[in-house]
Length: 115
Image (cartoon, rainbow, N blue to C red; front, side, top):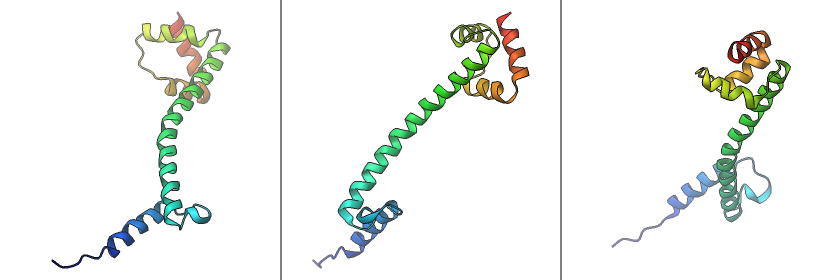
């Protein structure tokens, strides 16, 4: 049986690894062991922070909504049950964008729901 040399596979693996760690500093971009550790950690952090991003944006939308609702004489905790009772299918993102970009329409919406 002929001998198999694995130089091309190793080179391909390392090339892909270095492509992932491009832009990293010092040996983390061009030393195999450090680059592998750095890429694993970077992928772990990016996966985790994609979930955290959703949380932080939801918090921002709720804070914006509460501030806009308080100007209209209502609170967030009282508004959400009224919203579900009125069967309006608007999520917090849309409501906060409406509150920031068009306060007049938002105040008419709040009056319509609260009455």
